[in-house]
Length: 267
Image (cartoon, rainbow, N blue to C red; front, side):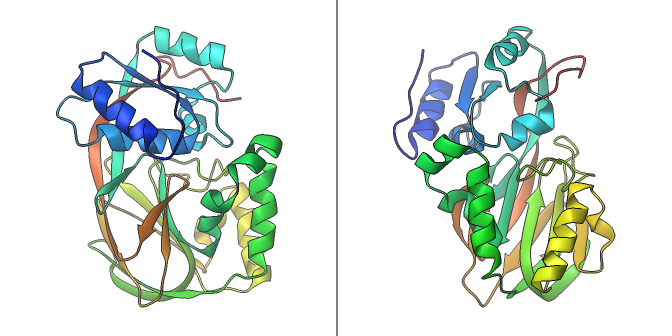
């Protein structure tokens, strides 16, 4: 049974109905935004069919992190092999995310880029929007509470809560994150100027940013984030409401079709 999505929320409804009807598997053909909608249709179900991925979106961060081939024929071959791996899901208040949650002005660019522009020029659209927003970077006040750090009250540029190591096209942004360890990897970038931000971004390309004094990194199972300011949430590249928010991890909550030998790559 095939379902073409036409508007926001279509994939959530289709996935929910497929689970209710007892389908043996669900295949999401699209990018991280499509995956986000699908898992929100599955996360609350008693019986959750395993999920196959055809990474046909702009960035496909989650597929890249799992080594699911970008070429759709190879991704189909992988699904046909029927090897499943249980993965964690993140929960943000009453919404769910599979790869990343975050807040701060730069995290907003993924859902501010028009779909038509993404279709025309792909990931370059994100870089163009990022350059535009960099000139307006400003810190915001944030309060984080977790057992591992107690309470942290800081002026921050952005925060990221990662379920995998592949975020925003950066394959080493959360180098210690794995999708089945029952933990969320939290990265906070403290107040800095534009020059420092560019330097830290270049370190992030090599996975060397976590030791910078402007960066706070820790792992946790639960986290509360509040702010006196107005901060929008980004969940898997989609608008996810605003702070305050409580984040939790749901260990081994969904099965994904992956390569049994671990030899396949996104590229």
